[in-house]
Length: 198
Image (cartoon, rainbow, N blue to C red; front, side, top):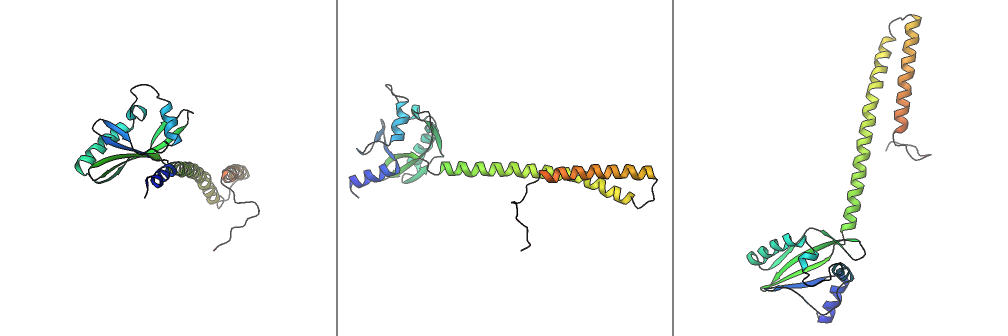
């Protein structure tokens, strides 16, 4: 692959490729830096700016990467996603990968394209867990009036006085009203839909 083609691939994937030398990191290639990287570094445009001052979370990963480069040598080690704030105040999820090959040490950085989808899945899972918890509470609420109605139904077998009968009917009406309220708060099927056994 030619240098121009490699530069095109790095640009398309929004990669920044750095090489770890004894004096620090040196950028590889002469292709334009990806816009996200430029926007993050604009936040810290002053003398003496370093990679870890702009991306503080990288500090612990680079310690792991140095151990990896020393002990393993060839291969790759990826970081967890970490957040960086750009010049527009937007947060970006970044992932770093340490690559060792033929005695050379490289650090690749790019936006984590899968982060928004993982966030969406987690949000849906949280919402579903909350909905499940709400349904469990509503079902628990049903237990008391159902138990009371069962007890009242058993009482009806004994011949009561008119006053006792009236009191039982009032309690039944109250429990039925409670059941109607709780059931009314449960999720409803689509209007016009019928539940058919499969």
